[in-house]
Length: 179
Image (cartoon, rainbow, N blue to C red; front, side):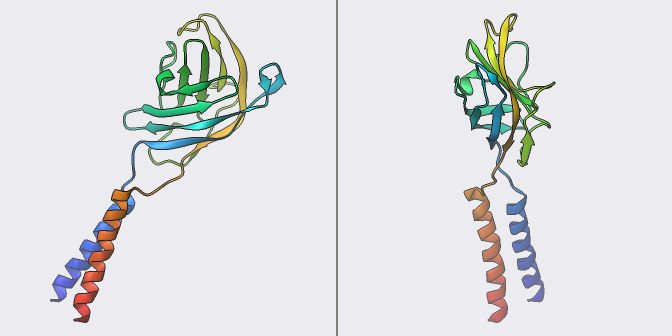
């Protein structure tokens, strides 16, 4: 009887632990405080807003929706820029004329957290235009001077179910002990 109770408790703890170790991929990253430089013209100090999903296991971006006061960049625009491959360290979006490149201080992961947007310098983050996807000629209109991308963790229903099963197992073991 004692061994059965121990087994039930261990099973409950393992289920609860499994729920806490599981995390969803891809994760949604949201721009925060992504501000462009000032200085006249397009350098107006405006902000970029929006979010995107990134799966670090496959280095795939999806559900991209980033808005500046010049353009809206969507998933179809990702990785279509010929000279820079989009990866965990940056995302490049090109719609045939407008180009937005956001570089991160560190590579994005599936663990989430927050990463700074790399400002002026290299690797830099900027918005401009190019006549072709190889950008043989083009113009950088403005660069980011501040900002970050961050993930807000939200438990998935599957994780909550596993967590609930673990708690139910612990409750069942306790009930059997009382009987």
